[in-house]
Image (tube, rainbow, N blue to C red):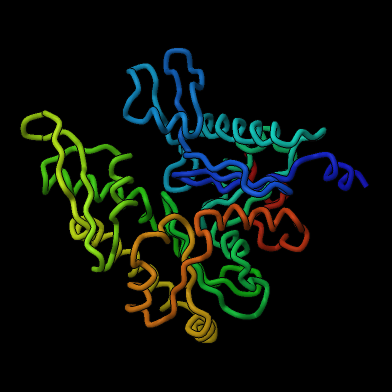
Length: 348
């Protein structure tokens, strides 16, 4: 009785807590927030100056006493207090969109393979930020639900969720993850590869935002249409500003080793997958989700090497957030795919 009353007068919020971006799903409205996971803090006063896009715009441009912090590293909380502030900001912003009487019920996506202590940290941060009930789900499972894979049926479904900090490779059947691997090779690693390559080959120092912009413009893993981009940075020899022309071939060379490690990780999961489920994957194919799925030629390259059909999910950036929304529609039906209930969490 009380639960029905609570649910009628409170919001249901799904959060894809990503290293690079955090997306928020509001039941009945869809995805209402998509902002970078960055918080700007005044180190003198300890106050939060900005959160999300406003804080990201400050990256590399702040005075000494203002620090732009990314509170999530490799998909897990590295700074608890700042994460709590960020979640409070996001939940507060969502509550303003739809004002309700009770505190919200929240489902949060985290990378696969997180420890109980990391689960507890996410749970506590969301509770402290104002959530009434908190449920936690692994991101590859949420992404699979978001793209309507038959996760509860006795067939194998394989998904590769390439985010900002981590890549989750998972084989799902009967509502559980049969095999999975979590790699620290994702969007941020590719950005670092590009920064290192330009420093070594062009003697040009660039920032994180520039590296990401170049990757999105001309990043590719297969030869195809010739692409080039102008890149501005600081000349390491003269110390003065300089502009160079970078081609898609340069970016392929820069990220080549990381992409090979990613492919090796996928092979490793396939090698340990039970034969019946492997047969399902060969028939049904592998689905790519997350921002990394948009890298030019990645699906084709994987398909050529693995000899298994590979597809990019529709709107791969929002798959996890949409999955949390579907879970919120019927928490009881998806109870077994959630990582926790309050009773199962480790003690503080």
